[in-house]
Image 1 (cartoon, one colour):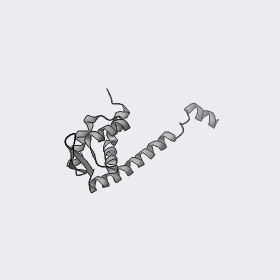
Image 2 (tube, helix red, strand yellow):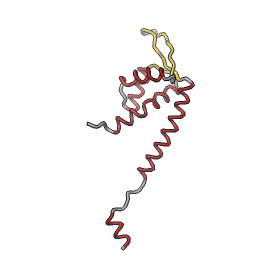
Image 3 (spheres, helix red, strand yellow):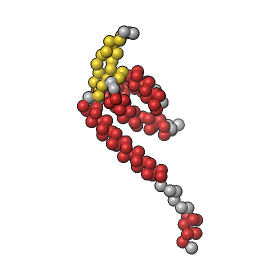
Image 4 (cartoon, one colour):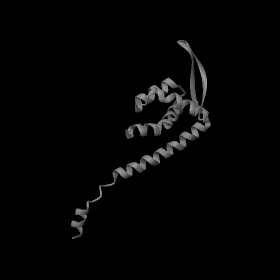
Length: 120
């Protein structure tokens, strides 16, 4: 069964969304997952592998913050490479979204019968 377009779109913009959230403020994976769940309906299980990959790719770095309510929490923050990636992905997204909007805004093509009627 093919995935819905909604699922594919979420997967395609997930890194961009995480980079955007981390550009606003440092965060830990659970909070990032909660923000994305509210915003785009993305599940928590998707965030942890993505955060590890982003760390491996040098887009984010981590640091620990002690918590009065339990063990230390691992916070993520953007690196310089992460900020550059955010800038590039934002530009790519805007170009893509504008192109899609342009296609959606084009009027429907006339049918063959209508075209024939107009030329007669």
